[in-house]
Length: 352
Image (cartoon, rainbow, N blue to C red):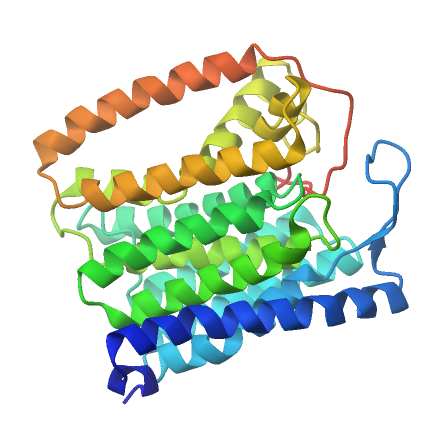
């Protein structure tokens, strides 16, 4: 039995969102003080643009805001407990990286293990009804989305803001399918991210860190896999899933293409992200953040419409979206990139 199951839907979903929101807003200042006390700070200098030492450890506040509702939503559900556990394991790996660098291959190994754990409990890609393709697709999806969120955590507020929009989109789809567990869990993730964003909004008072970006990235990856989308209809499922994480995935594709064309190492951080290119065009940090939040909100809304359509409609819409994706990619690739700026990306196929 699940505690949330007995509540009126309006109360249930309000609590699922508000408790992590309040929790993250309450914990974030305390975590910031802790980071200052133990010098877990991103100090200015070199290629960094912030003028004051800024604390990491924001992921602790996000995780703390999530845990209560996460446990209540999961109850005895093995799949959701695995999602919650995997998120916190990757959050701890990210926290270790915030405190002292972790090998990129260790990080990737933990991500693969988390994806494998999801597959074993039944949280799977489900695009093709074949185990030998479903397993690698599940693991690949987890690794790509976790690293994509780590990539976009290169400017104040972006990772947390986009994660909140993705989670709300997941909640909308799950709620439409009367899946109150996934809806509650997704709203909890959105609330925790939004609560942290209060202090991460430009100019940030605290940074999310790898602990937070890996935790949020895994939750988005896992919850999109957990969504009850049409079985046997590969196109609606695949496109809906991609749209729910469209902004991070687009930035990942942009950086990979730019570095490949420029013959630069893929595993070294740089200033060739979407955010950096837009800033170079004269947009302020707040404008860039709000723009990316708006784009992800639009994509999440489109995903809600998309999964209910026939394969023919989805394929046609997907083709159009593919053209738009490529045009935007070409446009941003033509934009100049600035000199090196604050880079909190990791250094991996995870790095930015």
